[in-house]
Length: 254
Ligand SMILES: Nc1ncnc2c1ncn2[C@@H]1O[C@H](COP(=O)(O)OP(=O)(O)OP(=O)(O)O)[C@@H](O)[C@H]1O
Image 1 (cartoon, rainbow, N blue to C red):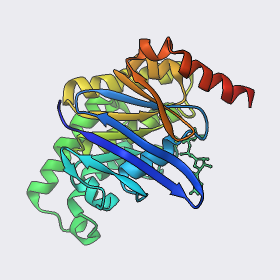
Image 2 (image 1 turned 90 degrees about the vertical axis):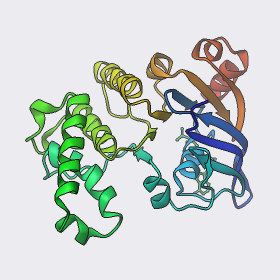
Image 3 (image 1 turned 90 degrees about the horizontal axis):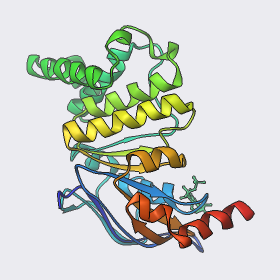
């Protein structure tokens, strides 16, 4: 398979609580992989271990076939792992275009802000090209000069994704991207993610509560409950699974 992000036997404990218990999952490039489960199932904890914000108690994380379990979040980003957050951290006073450009500028600066001020001509050209491509892919060309603070949440989500795309990341972690979007904005965002994967061949690991979005865009799903993997399969198999249904019904009854 086209190696992307892989988690093997991941276990994360918070004191006496085992939030994630021996989870193994594979999110290759060229595919949208979903991570779902009821509240408190361990999705965000797994996600944070993937991006390097949390160290596992046991197990490994690998990126493009290389073990990154001990690597920092910044080191994983340099290797091509990008992520969006449920609460987007756009710069409201900067334009759409400037926010998107930051995706690559920050990556080229590699944590040395001064490099952003004295960037080379080649870097500036690369930023312009990456920004134009991301603006086009995310259909944001008409809004390029608008300040991000003036946009609807639906447009802000697209700017957020555009910024990750401009950064040239080839494995994307998307955390609850439908949060704050209405139905039509969610559908449109889902179509954009599918297009990104088809055109760029990157991999996506998606944590999401909106089942319509999950079922529409995911190629393969992993289902967590109480920190354990209880099912994996294609969306249709997940939809028909009694085990999954019982886990969700259980959480509703609680
Ligand atoms: N920093 C932490 N310290 C202690 N316990 C934590 C911490 N983070 C998460 N937990 C616990 O770990 C378990 C899994 O939480 P997690 O946020 O990963 O679930 P989730 O599936 O993302 O839930 P939700 O869908 O509600 O966001 C929960 O019992 C939660 O209370």
